[in-house]
Amino acid sequence: MPTARKKTPVIELKKLTKRYGLGDAALSALDEVDLKISQGEFIAIMGPSGCGKTTLLNIIGLLDRADDGDYILDGKSVESLSSAQHAHIRSNQIGIVFQSFNLINRLPVLENVALPLTYKGMRRLKRLERASEVLKQFHLQEREYYMPWQLSGGQMQRVAIARALVNDPSIILADEPTGNLDSRSSHVIMEELSELHKKGNTIIMVTHNPNLTSYASRVIKMLDGKIASDRRIDINVKDEGVVKIPLNRHLSQEKVEREKKTTDSPASRRSKKTPKKTAKSTKPKKAAKK
Ligand SMILES: Nc1ncnc2c1ncn2[C@@H]1O[C@H](COP(=O)(O)OP(=O)(O)OP(=O)(O)O)[C@@H](O)[C@H]1O
Ligand SMILES: [Mg+2]
Image (cartoon, rainbow, N blue to C red):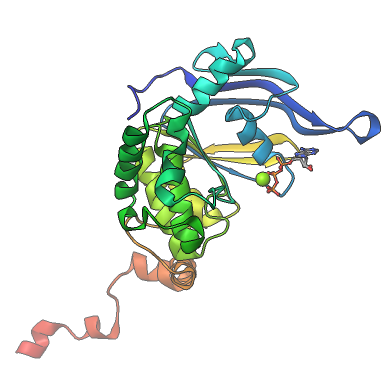
């Protein structure tokens, strides 16, 4: 589990720039991005295709390097660290969930989840024990010996999340973790991320689904490699136009839409202000009893 919360930002980006291509064809996938993220934040990153979300996540996850600017992780510039130190951070502090699951098809679920522990030099039996423990938390213990291709999309993504968590990372990066899932499975995944957030982990999630931002404590919108807006949200307050989906409830998309319509409709607003002014209330029960 994560260590005590810190006030200083766990991640700080200063004028972070990433370019692709050369000369006239050069493109800034990230254009002088400034961002501070504190431990325990749950950030949803949104924005149109190609605006730089994955590039940003890959740099934060040390899978890629910026061309300019600074990335300060836990008070240290990552540029000043060796590649061995990068590898150490990747296998101890950061867990990454990819949109396409990235499970290894020829390995059973248990081995897939245990994989990140191999890089830590943990012995096989211990690795498998730890992987089994995490799978149990995700109610997947009966699937330990299944091959990835024998699982549903939702189960695959839960295995991928279990694998990202097996090292007990304090920072979880998730690139459209629900992008390939139906709405019910999406909410199961979101509840799991929400639980991790409640335990004090930092979560940075890319999503295209505005409904899912209701789980986040901060919503960042990107456009053309820049941060276009950055909004902190009290996650206990219902956000305008976005349905707050309570935890432990799996809603179908239709139900979400229905709730949204009911909540937004003028009739529902009227009925909230004057709850019981109906035909019945004009005929008091007392009178009926007499
Ligand atoms: N390896 C690469 N080589 C060249 N250009 C790249 C490379 N990776 C990304 N880009 C470009 O950088 C820009 C940002 O890409 P990125 O993948 O970060 O977008 P995104 O916001 O994640 O989009 P999506 O929502 O479609 O996943 C895009 O214009 C993309 O074409
Ligand atoms: Mg992307």
